[in-house]
Image (cartoon, rainbow, N blue to C red; front, side, top):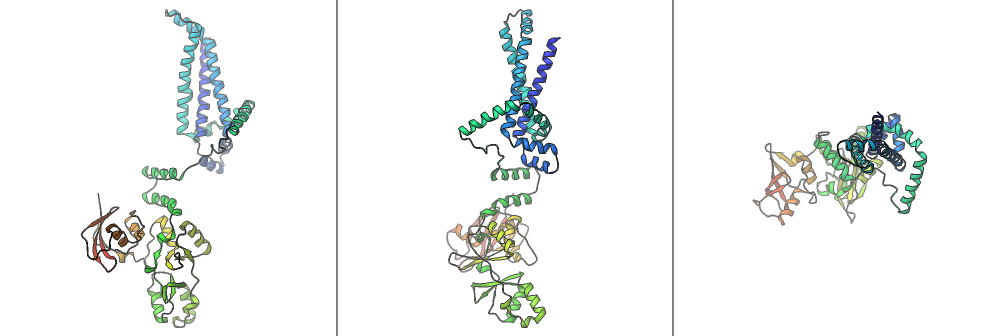
Length: 430
């Protein structure tokens, strides 16, 4: 009958071993951001858990003390109380073994049971539900940490002394997540159906945001819609009326001499007061916001927000005008193209059928990528430049060669003096 009590006591110690093994794995695998969120929502256990998890040396020492004591006690109790009866059991079967051999066999059997039910299975359960297990065990851990404080204190100062002696990093317990890991989580989340393709692309675009410079997304000087300040008032107002934009760059005689930006709203306010024929347009021109061509767009975005600029004029290394970039251009790098009723993309891309398009070869590659959802390298800026780069020369006549870029099959339709004029694009479908 005594053996039954011994076995029950050993079973309890194995359960205790399993509890602390699971608690250890849960605390190590804990997502601190989730716990912090629960704590901010008023979860008292999460608050205690967040505090405990902040001192890994102390809680690991506490758990190791508990696991070690449970293991030693179960082995000692089993060896001292079961070895004699175990030996007699084998003698009754005609097998003569000593008490020492009985202790060894009992220890091996107990180690196997403890390893499976007191270590591996509890840790596997905790690994699958770290927050849940950690929250369930936090109250017991607090009590255990109080009871074992003297032993933990000794272990803690010993551990810290060794860490200091060997100059080990103090930050090894911090939960650091790399950019690559976050990107992998985004892709995994998309594959599991947690969010759609558009949401995945936006999240990935955020990581590319600080790698893009203004020059890569600008509208080149040759494509900028601008008005000459020396134009007659009638010509000036006609160009404003035809303009598909609310803000227009103003230059003096040449586009290389942009003197500012005019806001259509300013023109309308002034016209209401004086009439269009009496407006002095020079007085409405706002000072331009100049930027270098190599500025990162994440920096530019913050500056334009702060200083309330919608358009920035890009200067090259010699101070010449290279192009312009708008706040909308920057935002589009995250959310994709923002079309409105004034966008002129339809003039550059003409749909012939479901899979075939006639495209102006001077289209910006960024616009082409947005329209067709492709990822063509944008170093050449225009589609014409990309094809010429592939050919290795500027064609004087139409070549029959077809070009494959991403999921697009492209062939030249017409050529002008120094560039490719029109191309036919066919979407490759699987």
